[in-house]
Length: 226
Ligand SMILES: Cc1cc2nc3c(=O)[nH]c(=O)nc-3n(C[C@H](O)[C@H](O)[C@H](O)COP(=O)(O)O)c2cc1C
Image 1 (cartoon, helix red, strand yellow):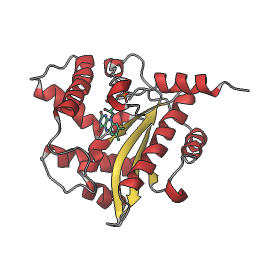
Image 2 (cartoon, helix red, strand yellow):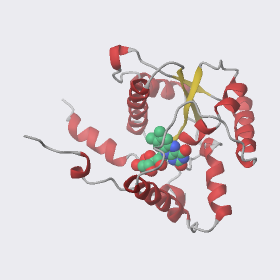
Image 3 (cartoon, protein in one colour):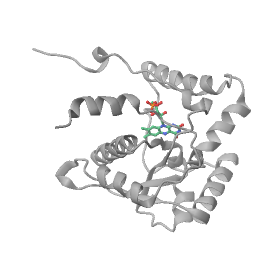
Image 4 (cartoon, protein in one colour):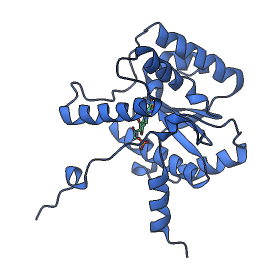
């Protein structure tokens, strides 16, 4: 029998958000295997909220062009759901800054290099040129529980991909332009845009993929009472 504890530990420890990919294609069969495994995630009342759209070819190109254009123009849309606490508490702000420093540090982009930071940010809207680009949606009406369920599925997807030698990066930046995405993909207003997902084979030589983030200590989020 497979020692699942160790196997999980290997996967969870090896997974990183990957922001540069080889052009090696991912076969439809392999992608489907990953998706089928992600579907095994639990959800409240087994509602299995959310859906994934694989954007390809000219649809993907047009979507990325329009997203980049919207972002360059500084267009502001009302997002379908709120993400960060406003205002951001100091502890969380410190974690956010550390993650940004890890990313830009790996790239050698300094704090005041606006152009360098913008160039990296723009790559969000191109799914970091990953061979597979997914848009994650959820039907209007779900509360926070739906997002919790969907998050489990997405982590399942990341680890299922990792187990097959693939890498991923969630792209929350996509949620800034839900109308651009809906218009490009012909989606109803009731289809909420949650995030994007890049998937493919990591480019091991890309400096951006040397980004490493830390986690808070166990006692910061785990307490024993009684
Ligand atoms: C829901 C979600 C949205 C994210 N959105 C972005 C994004 O828009 N751009 C980006 O570069 N990274 C994004 N990330 C990656 C996080 O920055 C990353 O998970 C975090 O810094 C921890 O690093 P790790 O994934 O390498 O462990 C996102 C991650 C999650 C889970």
